[in-house]
Amino acid sequence: MRSFSSALRLLCLLVVICGMATVSYGSGFSIFEQGAKATGMGGAFTATADDPSAMFYNVAGIAYQRKLSGMMGGTLITFANEFEGDPASEFPGAGVDGRYKDHSFIIPATYAVIPIGENLTFGLGQFTAFGLRTEWEDANRFPGRFISQDANLKTVSIQPSLAYKMMGDRLALGLGLEYRTSHIQLERNNAIFNPFTGRIVDVAHIRLDSDWNNDYGFSAGLIFKPRSTWSFGASYRAPMDIDYEGDATFTQISTGNAQLDAIVRAGLPPDQKITTTLPFPALTHVGLATTMIPSWTVAFDVDHTSWSRFKALLVEFDRNPERNLFAEQNWEDTLSYRLGGDHPVTPNWDVRLGAVYDENPQPDEAVGPLLPDSDRLGVSFGLGFHNDHWRIDATEMVLHFYDRSTFGKNADNFNGTYKTSANLFSLSVGYTF
Image (cartoon, rainbow, N blue to C red):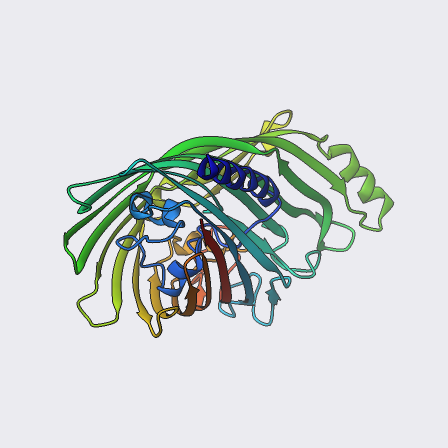
């Protein structure tokens, strides 16, 4: 009875935290940092998955967690991006630059694990697997403001899970049912040619703001341990398509010329409903882990993300379909390579090291102010403390993004080079009853 009461309190706390987490958001379309221990190992956690964050990395891992436990925490992400115009292109040209507005993001994650009988484990997790924020500083002067001033994608996932171990603990299978809710906000300016001055002028600000919409998917995983020193893991998270409904708001910007303002006002669309669909990719992970090196657990993962599902972004207007926004994306599937190590230095303290190389999915034509992505290389260092009840993990990860040029190919003829860097600090606190 006491165990059941503790489990009930833990689940209630998790539900409250999940509700609070919907106000948080992350940078980057895909967010892999869902637990400090895993992040300390560069995300190479598919074959290990030995804390409650297994519900994100490989749900089969909770089968080996045989005590009632909970874990909560998050990742603080700070990043910077700078744009320089391509001197070989007509627009925006040499000497034109821009940068992101300073932002810090907290990506929350919360998990609970409840053993049932000798071999079955139930889990409940909340995490933010996808997110995006690209807000440009001095947005009304940024030269790419007619393409994008601010793009904000928020997601929250809640996943109940079951995992079962068999064959004398050599094999574990897991399944999770994911509920994902999401919100999109896009902002940009519109411009026209001013015949009185011979210049391009801003005439309207467009804000597209969706409701919170949702879809359902699943996650499945397995862990196989052929020997006591080797572990193989595989995990799959299904794709989703979220259909968004929301509102488009058009706000006129005065040009200072009454005659031109009257012409703009007459042609300005009314505020109206909008719809769009965003395809989220499938995630497939395979990994190996070994303890053959004395006092070390070494893990290696390869991750595949089906970004090729993202062919285009289409926003449809309810009353003025002739103003629908269409942007080809034609993204490609990507691979990520992750290497990590976990070394216990005392009975209560662990040190972790990690490295990751992550391919980007964007062709040169799609690289722009909405999302300028590039290949990235990351390194991480983590510390972990644990005793009979508590575990505290902390990790610092530095991501270096390779400079990304459009090579004069941008579909909106907005050509230049983007330079990005990011720093991530992850903290997780867990308690075992």
